[in-house]
Length: 266
Image 1 (cartoon, rainbow, N blue to C red):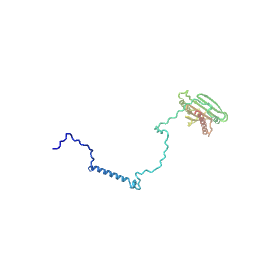
Image 2: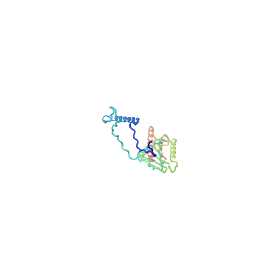
Image 3: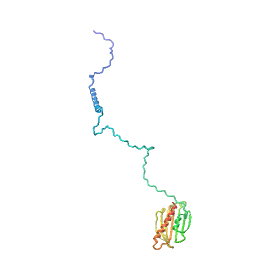
Image 4: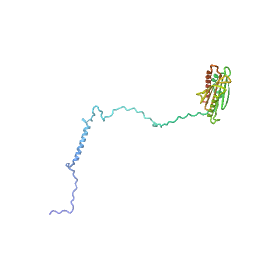
């Protein structure tokens, strides 16, 4: 018989596990290690040329990795100081605004001061003058005292804003009434009655020959805002063969005086 077994269990001393032997390493791991080693070796051969230099590109072709040629930098304009300009707001088309209406005239100049003295001496030599004036009407008459007959009459009529609710409209109505009366003048033979451009807001001129006395009259009537100006220049009636020349002369002189008078109301 053998020895009797002890009553307590046998306690074995602990020892660390031993690594597996090379012979037991899995074949798959070895294969992967070989593939990785081959790839690394091939990459090193590709990037390293002979004697450790980098591979050069084929002649005649630029290398893909060659740096771009150096160029001079383009001159840059200095940055503007201050805030950046704002973008202009879009514009919309608008109809042109009508010019502001001039203020009505409120007073008349001196009756015989509306025509220059040099003009009077040239048109009516050695003239005797007479005048009449009030706040709404001013007239001046020049009559020659020797030689050939010459006569000049100037009138300015004011439609005052203080006396008229619509001074411009009243002046227009008076101007239109004067033009109608010129067409129907029974005391004179009207030979010319036509609009006159370039004087005031509206104007017309008339050439007539008085029936009662041998005189020819060139007359110009013009309106500037709420004032109506009338200028009459008279000479002896034309003889035979000089009617056209006398008409042009009388109308030209009356127009010149009317232009001077209207200049007082600018």
